[in-house]
Length: 218
Picture (spheres, helix red, strand yellow):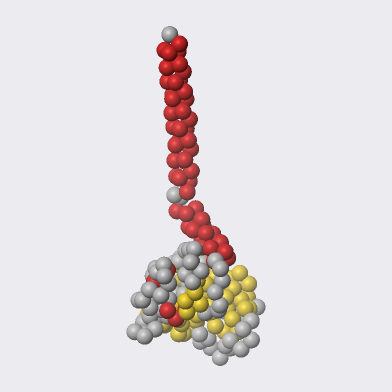
């Protein structure tokens, strides 16, 4: 009889555990659903990329951190050149160029102390891309920086052709100055979300960051 009693207790306990487990599974499922919201995933990924960039043992300038538990540094020139230089292969695992001919990125002003026209936004249009066989980690781009500005007096429409390079090692776009005012643009991706970059306008001579636009893929 005692045996039967303990058997019932056992079954009750199993039922209780099963219910608890079911509840946990439902909770987990809800958490996963919340996480799979695309915008949320993107934000989490971008945050993770930024945290990893901060906590990686740092390499000297112009060297790439192989990441993971292996504190290996390789030259930026070796990133995405088709040969694995990191022991863990990290230097060849993020080689997707976020720019394609015909792409437009629209940049909204954050602050601007230096451009001639002080536009609310700028559109960066990619005309063409070329990759040099001996320098595949730094594709060259030909772009147009399009500025549209309306004032009470008139409407300004300017399209400035410029050359640029993209660095896989740094997830960075460098647009060379297209006018004699010596203002270049440096676009920094966060390493995860390649539909958005922070564009800083930099004085070529003084290296001063004098304007900032946040760009989104159109």
